[in-house]
Length: 374
Image (tube, rainbow, N blue to C red; front, side, top):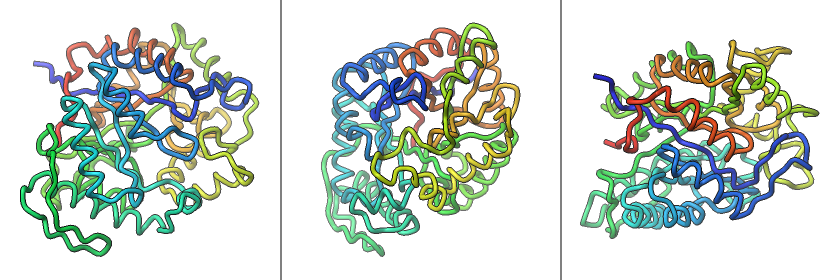
């Protein structure tokens, strides 16, 4: 019997959308109308969750997620827990309330922040090591608050909490945690707490090796069976392979490397890539793949690094016709991934094409529930 264990998520670009990332005139500015179009496609097309991004250019993720919980029926917002940005007691109450109000449609994205410079600009003085330390404590506190009716008596390095809260989450024991990161701290926290570890992109063989490493880490925490794996990828899909590659080239036409379209806009924005490179191991890994891919920017027949020239974060794309896109995703399934957090430009059109042309190729294998925390 075929296992129904695959989940597909989509990205909501609250910093704005585009048809050409290097051309300011091709930008589709933020608006409720833009978001509504994307969310309507995602909610009705079989996607399980929807990633709410966070950086200075984005609309606030928890508010946007709560708004769309109220006007959707199926999809679950994947909302960020930004380490050090919010007291963990308030975070626990907010997430439990959203989980109850949505009927159990909520996922939580653990984020330490990819750039120390931006975090400090937001008024958070901690470096990334400290933010990961706080993240670990924050998740421990939330788990204990959600499972206890008595004051929890938590006294850690960064937080001291001795209270109890209501409500408890509807999902038990709690909503699923996602984490994407490549540093030693990120991997250890994911092994300790995550429901799904999201890789930002690599060849399937590289992902298979990383999965074995994370399984060994999770085993040390008694969680090997509780940790799942997924890919954060871009999708460029068209009726023919030639059309898909033409679409991919148009998307970065005129690009200057590392003028990042999705980062904060301020006078020193040109230095954003260097700040991210100093801070983020996951971005260093993605940009290393970009360098390895050479002039073709191909990691394989249908894996393309081009978007990483103009976008921080998840810039590895699957490019091809529907059959080729599905076959490439299947390679990641065989490597051990069961969840795919996807995006494409412009996002409503790309989600519609993926849902209509690619998802049916996984018929009978897609779960109708979120990944389950344990």
